[in-house]
Length: 216
Image 1 (cartoon, one colour):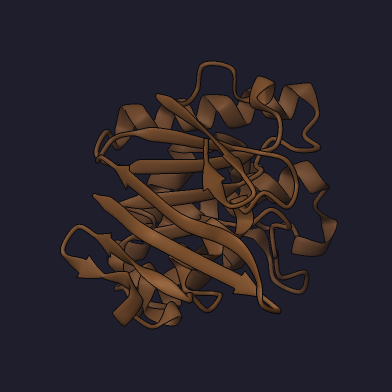
Image 2 (cartoon, one colour):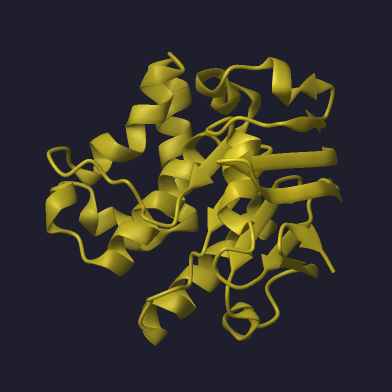
């Protein structure tokens, strides 16, 4: 599924990821845990093509990610929910969810099928659909970001610090949604980053610890 070999990333000549390698099989949920600044977000942004890579290789199945521009990677089946959510405030929740499908120029039928599935996985979104993105709480925004990632992430879903700042009730709903992903899409890979491993409970199949840009 996802193979990363010797990934190196630097900012202002300071190394952030140091020859990092990772192999993730289909249907696996992997958590990468580490302190702030350890390289967790940089890893996800590298996979999505949002930052420049100094060296290393990345493949999703047979696709060479390094040769694929960032704006085309969602078309390979990658979905990304960033830590800061990035919900468009002037658009409704439904418009935020549909936007990736519009960019990929999916048919109306494909888009509606994906929306139907997302609303089954994250049923809390149903009542939010007409709501403005500006009217969401931080926790609700994270639920919308998860749904948006699922609209296109039919192979790999990247979740950056999804449980940080969530109230206990919302954290439980988020965890339940991840469980429904595994039940309804057993082939989908989920890669989660978190600072606090205790927030993950028994969600991941495997937990890797990252320190100073390397797995330990």
